Length: 244
Length: 278
Image (cartoon, rainbow over all chains, first blue to last red; front, top):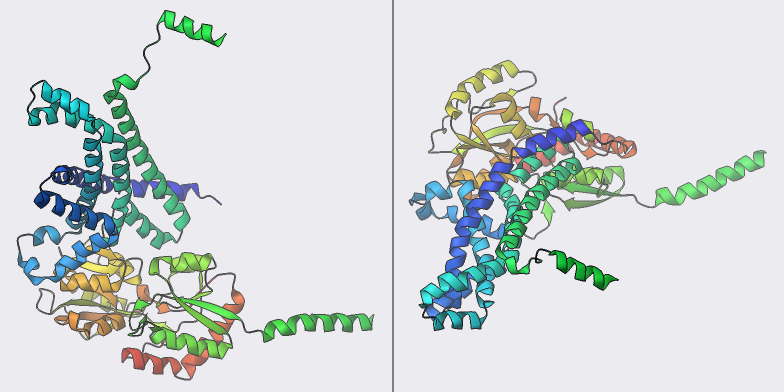
């Protein structure tokens, strides 16, 4: 009943989609991350001319489905002849760039809130201490606030990256042959959706497993104080005594 | 003994009669975005060639029909999963599909063609206005495709994924043009008009209908019309174990083809006769 040869072939064909999936993820996470950082700073600003546009951007991109955003960028923008004549068209003509742009703009909105959360969670006492040592605001931000914020936002941010890996599947709707695109093609040739989707799911699972591991290692490296102290001989003895 | 047999027959009859008197419901899936075969009309209801035909066939089979729209990709899997009983979605009979589902007698022939932008480089594809059967005139068709091939080099051609159009590109023009697969013909038509595609291949009836819309002004059919072969004939898709329904559909379709009903609907919706040539 379970056709191992077919599963094997499917698996090998789907692996061909991994580079495109990872490219789209990397491209959108990196460029979206930069945009998110700017947005987070704008959101934290007391100047309404910075805060309000950032608020609106985040509201708009978090409040609409990514699929709709991809379609608006791919099919919607191409409707305007002015745009088709512009210098942007060589980029927007390609489904690849449309998908990357949509994914980046989308993740920027979510990541901005993650970064802002990280920044807000830095204890006021730490900032005051830095300032009282004579650090300028910029220096305090670079040496104290940002490292702490980065560490605090890591779990939420790893979540966002895993979501992005899965979101690249939507790129298949605009003709890109990443893992899901290839899976759809294989299904149309074989009419065996269960086997193909199980393989595709397993590949996404493996990719996200690696990403989750990388982040948990990073988390471990960045929080030395949360590790258990190396057990000394005397410490062990006390533990044992307690158990008795 | 005899009395017992009569009694048994009576019980059987009693059990069978109400069941057959009760109208059987046949759920038919269609694509609903493939004008003029099946599409959403201005008031939101599904209409088109296949809807008219389905209603006619159901009347002939004396069953009650429910027509449900379903995305193209999901048609065969959902049929197999028992979500409905038949597919009428301009689905060509292909050897691959025959491995997983059964087909009724054909109710239409598949005819496909290229559409291009009228002022683009492909506007004068050779063979425009000609029709070739890939079954009986494959040599002539291949000769024409031999002339078309070099023109398509480096061009981008859109097809709807998992259709006979993609099989056609795969069989006759493999590796020549870049082929992009879309979910619907509407999407590839859109990209033809905004310049992302140089040509599309799709069912000629569907293209002809789409070209009448204002947003496809400036596009036209080009090159020959191809039929049979990879495009095959179009039948009702059925589960393999549903022999009883297949017999019913076969009879109804043969009758509808014979008395000109299929031709009438075809000319109403396509302006041409797509009824299967036997």
